[in-house]
Length: 374
Image (tube, rainbow, N blue to C red; front, side, top):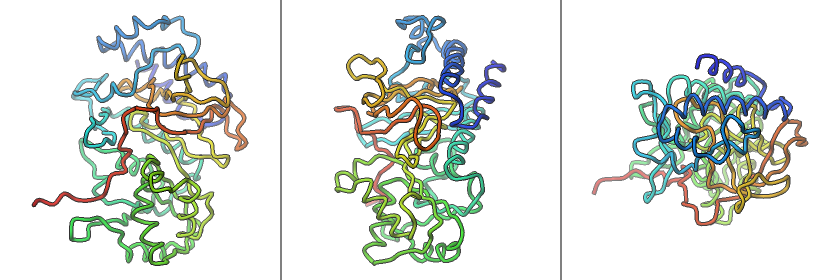
């Protein structure tokens, strides 16, 4: 096991988008086969699942042949775990509507460490390695440390390695609602007008609690060096006829920055430690320690470039839960297996929506309203 962990760490230490695809896939295949043998077989149900998979694990020659799980299995209660209860340091919970069970992901110390390193390696490739003031468009309660943490908190904490200081600009208004603290935001903007700043918020929260209130009062902030990262589903904004172009333009106008400084990234709690920001070509790239397979909805075979299908995420990072090979509820287009114009190597995709009739995930875009006892 120690040798396997060392090899995972070595792959994590590589530049995230520089490995030639053939080499990357060969390394990933061997690591994932070993992880399934050593980790999944600790659990009787998973061991039986692997044993009855149509393709023998040892003879598999491509990632697409390895036994994957539907992401919904991570909604199991108690959570699926590959480590002893005493080794669990934190449980991450996905977003869910009131009628759904969230996914619950258990982290041991090693997986939590890799999660932080993975997100940092990806973000550094897009943002640079230096620290800067960090503005979070959310409330401090969203990222409170504890034994459990939600999707928004995990995303907020994942970017903390890039922060010299952290400022939250949403808070309670005394009536049970959450509002933008305009005075705090304006002070922050004036103090950091001439330096790079990192801003993060969930997509819908940024629009509802930052862009809309400032547009309504014709308020703009002169912060041309900001980089704005956001994540979460687009469904609620699409219901309000807000597309990606409108969203990016609105944020850029508020901060007086280029729309290129607004980065949408896809991420899910179940795929811990891996995020997929947009490159300048509008594509999302897979780092060396992960892979994405786009599967035909009817045959479940991998599609060819330019085709759409169901997204499967693959990762070598977790050793505390079976999140290595997960078939998601998301649809994507395989743009290319290599050769994006941005220069990053490996698979690049675009996410295009949800699988029809799949359950609606909350995506963290919940109304920021406190429940007030009657």
